[in-house]
Image 1 (cartoon, rainbow, N blue to C red):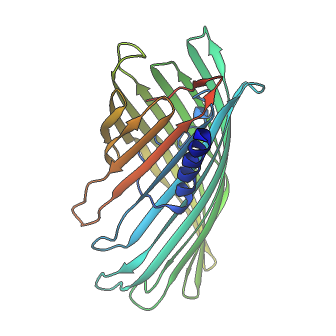
Image 2: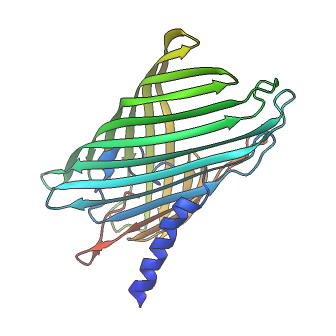
Image 3: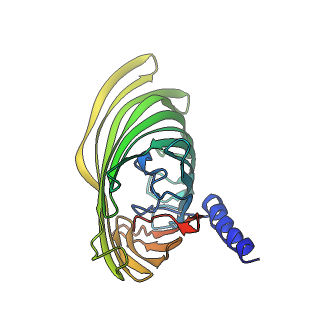
Length: 320
């Protein structure tokens, strides 16, 4: 009976990832979000979910993002495998002087990853990886230019991602790069149609280190950093005219996580705001609260959840 209720508890959080609401995702809440090499990194099977909401602000309406993932290590393949799904949506009305009208948008995504594991002297793990992602989206803006014309945008994308991860019990270094395969966006304004195709280079560097005396220590401190570098090259076709232009994004800090743990209580700072939560060898629940911006837009940060299934009577590792 106890096992039944535990399975129901896990299922509830999985379903919440699809039906709930979310906005900013704290770094580390979804291990495979930026690098597929984290698939199977916990040894045992692992479930992650992230939900939350941004309520209406001064200028914009509701928006949410929901994400769930599953990964585990497969001994016969000597590899980690992982699957991720996400859904986001927003809607509302604008109240700018010239842009009064309603709008909405939604997007979906599905990813699958594989990450072989190579042990080095029993202390270090090297993991190359590959991932395939498909996504689609649509957005609509009424009276966008204040002249009665509507903007309708639809798009889809298929991309790959390759990564590497070098980690120990205390620290890790990871790198991943996106590989565009196909994708375009169709912009329709009144009777005009524009098709924009993207050839985008984006890469991610991740670093993390856990400071503690031993793995059994009551207190630990784990900073994690995420850096991004990349460039866009776009081709646009509109009314029989075509042109292309590059847009460069230089190396920059994309996100940061500073997490403190005392026994089973966790707290700290992240790119989405501040967080507090509970963590055991199998379960982690974390609530992240954003800070209201000067424009009046506020964020109620994500409720993230992680569950690690026991394997051979033992739970897998948690990064922090």
